Image (tube, rainbow, N blue to C red):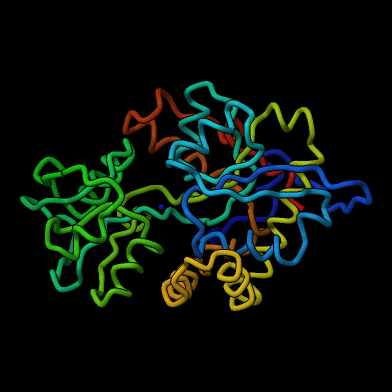
Length: 324
């Protein structure tokens, strides 16, 4: 699962802007960042910041680890076993609505990553044409809302689409003809299918009736913010620096990502990074800004689909106070 017309003052509306990156002569403080998934192109800015020494210069000895499962970042940050994590903006909002301590501290991408992904050879002009056909979903609760929103925006009836839970192997099922489409992340799953020789049609959530919200955010807890705001500020500043480098020189960041993760297929990572670059761009506001109007739209959408009990104010689950 960018900001087009918003003034820079949005960050002040949410919580106030932070200070610039501070360096420290003291021994770096160890902290752990858990990714949302295995390392891939969306994490290029993080690996750029590691390779360039931005975290260490900010006084952080940062360990970056993948999750064992997609629920790990949310569960482990709640227990205090990790300091920072990445997740879909949906997940952080849901955690806050359930009374957990999670709070988003910067946007990694500005647009939703979720989409219905279909083969272009199917010649679907609208998601409404999926009526009577099988669509794969991962089983994550928000997938059903994504599917319903996109189909309804195309003028179709979601009840006429046969949704089956297939986990996270939607690309293989699509290529094998087991499903007519599947819910996935278009810069990753869609690119993976396309790179295998099967051009795809992406029906993106924010282009088909859904909210325009940050599809990946970095988050921590209010407890850590209260105990060590300097650590949070340093982490955000170093991460912002890495992604600003990525926007200026994508190839250097790609090289850093591939050097640290030799199992990644370079051709796929290159294509995926090309897809991510436009949504890394914050569109006139500082990189990482969590735009209040986008967060409010997400919250209303979650409430409308009963994924949370009631809409939350943006300040309940996000803050811009640590942005440089």
